Figure 1 (spheres, rainbow over the protein chains, first blue to last red):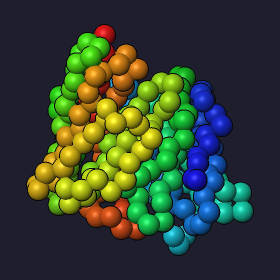
Figure 2: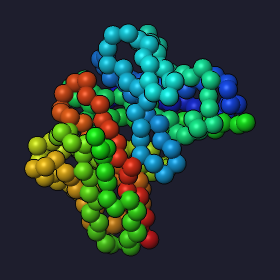
Figure 3: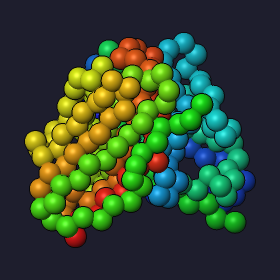
Figure 4: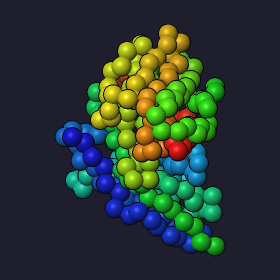
Length: 114
Length: 114
């Protein structure tokens, strides 16, 4: 069965600092990987996705993520965070036969300090 | 193009009652999935519908059910509500049941069971 681990429950960074959120997955084949962001009381917004090809993927809001098969990781990065990036971030893996059923990590809450 | 819409946004019920939540997918999307989000269990897959048929089901009791209509709109029903059913219920849609599809989420329905 597929699974996703986000080892950091809560991260605090200063505005303007760089950010890396960790995500490790367990899946028997090449996974389809996603990062979603959720603001308080809101649904999930897709930041970026990896299906195949270039292992460095660019997303919205200046985020990027790198797929590393050897480490089973798909870490999310941003070079300079803004106060509006404060939210909860979820990594998810989809099934190779269809992404209608996503398995999510437990999420990482990001706090930005001035 | 309008996003995924969910109604109602907020709901308060008492134990033993039943509730029906509605989801309208993005126009042209035929697959609708439902997720439950709670602080304790995180995001968990409930079920997925495509062409008015349930195609995938998560590990939830039979009190949780759903259906999909010919216009792809979907409803989920929870009967005999329990306190533990208090959660944010998220609906997501994608175009087809195929690889390299992306799920887009609605804002959710927040259910409080008293």
